[in-house]
Image 1: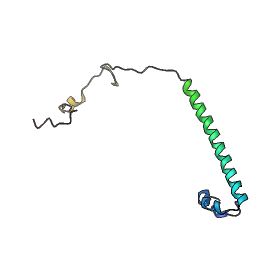
Image 2: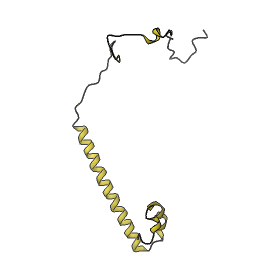
Image 3: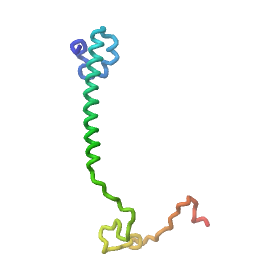
Image 4: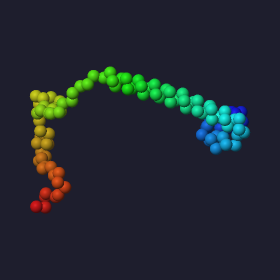
Length: 104
């Protein structure tokens, strides 16, 4: 079949519309070849998914911290600096309500 369409040898997608123009024995051969290639892909993906599932089942469960303390997220717990105060920036109140608090 490849000798009939040498210009499509590199671009198989461009040959899809021409499949219906092939004579019946070649159409059937094409469909069988396509189905068997998809079967190989599906079997490989099922194997990879199974390995992924097994690896997840073998993982050890670790509890996550649900609380924080004063040193949470600090690089050096001994050195507690307020960056805003050092830069001369006054801390602003946080507005979660969506209303403008400056026009009071």
